[in-house]
Image (cartoon, rainbow, N blue to C red; front, side, top):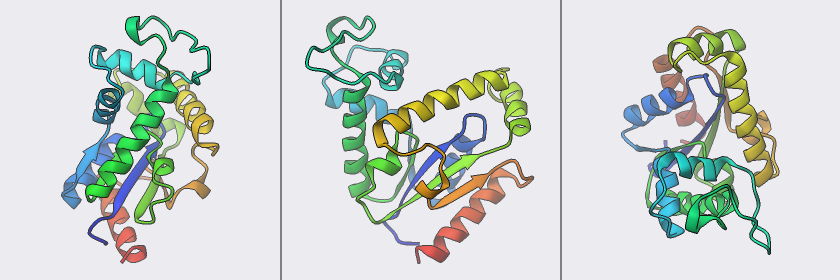
Length: 201
């Protein structure tokens, strides 16, 4: 595997993508970037007084900037901010971090942000409904499959809006992984690393 390879991971909610990303980061000895990207992007925009939940709401609500700066919800001095500003800032942060060395990005349309960077490997993690429903009960504080799917719809809407691509379409990724086929996440991580070593050697 190339020393400066960057991995991006997109995932269905409940498929174990976050845990898989953590396992991969540990096995490869690289840093995993997830929600900290939101804080870095906010700092780049000069936003320092919002909670993480408020930043995530700002990030995830598809609301483009306009000439009239339609107020966004009720964020006080940041009412003119929008998810587009966060998206652009996050993309810039992702590109800058990727220049510094190998790492893993979870979500945040990182695959699209790095589309002009040759040295990245994009993964989409999915699972069947039964697997996700079980994890919703055991891992995600009792969330129902309906709640998990609602989150997926939000992720798809955000990704499709800002990238012009279709979220989860295998053609957009180097590898699509189904975590519900019986293998442990640790075994899947080993398989991913072996595959990347073959195609990115």
